[in-house]
Amino acid sequence: MPDVEVPVLIVGGGLSGLASALFLRQHGIDCRLVERNTTTSQLLRSTHVSPRTMELFRTVGIQQAVWDVAEKVVLGKYWSETDLPPRQLPRAILRANSLADVVASNVVVMEEGANLFTNVGPVEPVWCGQDRVEPIMLREARRRGAHIDFNTEMLSFTADADGVSARVRDRGTGEETSVRAKYLIGADGAGGKIRTELGIERRGNGTVGHVLNVLFKADLDGILGGRRFLILYLSHPEAAGMLFKLDDERWIFGWFCGPEQIEEGRVSDAECVDLIRKATGEPQLSVDIHMTMGWWMAHEIVDSYRSDRVFLTGDACHVLPPTGGFGANAGIQDANNLAWKLAGVLNGWADEKLLDSYEAERRPVGRATADQAWMRHTQWSDPGAANRHDQRDQTVVTTAYRYSSDAVVGAHHDEVFGHDLTIDGRPGMRVPHVWVTSGGEQISTVDLAGTGFALLAAADGARWAGAAETVAQRLGVPLTARRVAPDGDLTAPRGALASVCGIEETGAVLVRPDGFVGWRSPGLPADPTAELHDALSRIVGRPA
Image (cartoon, rainbow, N blue to C red; front, side, top):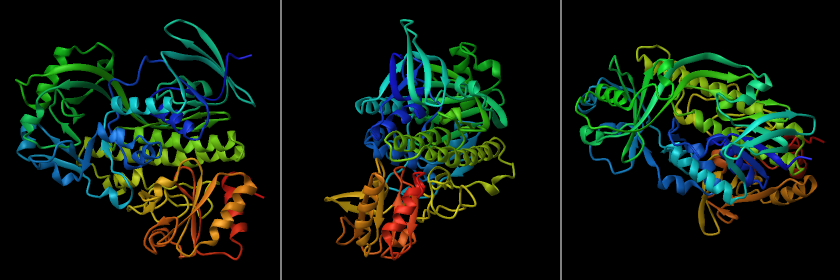
């Protein structure tokens, strides 16, 4: 008999692993997470928290906690302003030879975000290091009952038709434990062993560079005179790299180097100080080095996100350049997509066929996201490169992507990303954002996703409530109907939902637990119960 039995074993305690634990517990699924490091990330690569990720954090109640420790992202055009309020960073990517060039506005503006996020969602993106985000996720996952062990590694695993057996070891005591799980989530990163042991190949443009991240303190704000940016590429021939701000005190300089320089301890603190002084063009700059971490940039995606009862998430699935801030957000969204599907199967209201839609939905998004990061990498590394024609807006990539799978009832999408920021209620897209009032509180239609399905009916769709109740009882699927109208249980002006969802006032949209539209009815059919029953049955893999 195994020492521990659990529905889901998660290997890896980074952003995607913690997200897996957090979202599984949101659905009431017991899980155990093991992470070989002794604590959450101390030095980081991830800093951009996209609007879509903040929406997911909102559903589990940690949006405000992240907001409280983060920098707000504002329109890129403000990068040259000298009087911005505290904790605001313009969404600007710049290239210059020194900080003095930034002060003189002698820069190349490589990207200058111009869209307003509040037009498409209830929350805005933030700039926040994973060293601050991960502890918040960890606390909430544990509060919800997740069993999380640091300084613990998985030694081996075997999968069979009924589950996965694993051996894990406490690295402090040496004690070994056998774990039996229904499913295994491999969130063990780009260099993890689970993918390779499964024999899953990773393909793409390969390794494109090596970076030594240097975390330091220095008075760069005083030199810049209040000017701010998300990322500044610095072009000194001996110290080329990227500079970005973490918070009021800390900065990171990512030095573009060779593979040998990223080895731990290979570059001394004194050499790091010299690199930062050269890169910034400030030879007398006082620099306090805190930590260094080497890593490699690549463009690769796995051939499969799944092998029977083992699933991959985050960097274990896709490795992409940091340009655009897409990687960590994609990993968190992988976890959210997978969690509700595992919950449906484990709770008995979905067939195992639903799990096939995880790869069908997330792999095309992962591949297209990696390609968008690659385009930005080549463009930002060489501003003269002529490949911007197929770049899509950052918010399109992080929020307006589209799913096509058996868990979406409707026409499949030709592309993962559209050419403009459109979220219009079509099945396979995140539900459009509409402010509504519920119980005296203003919420978004995006907030209605979470632990079950939501059927949102327009003003004249009162009959959908009875249909939803009947279908929920027949299928045993968690489903709640809400009418959006001046006199509805979600109050909003007449037409507020219909106008953005492409339906009539008698129509409805069926929103999956991950916030994506699974099906929509433009109007009221002759038999709404039969239509809804058929759609929901197909989504959860139980067609009549």
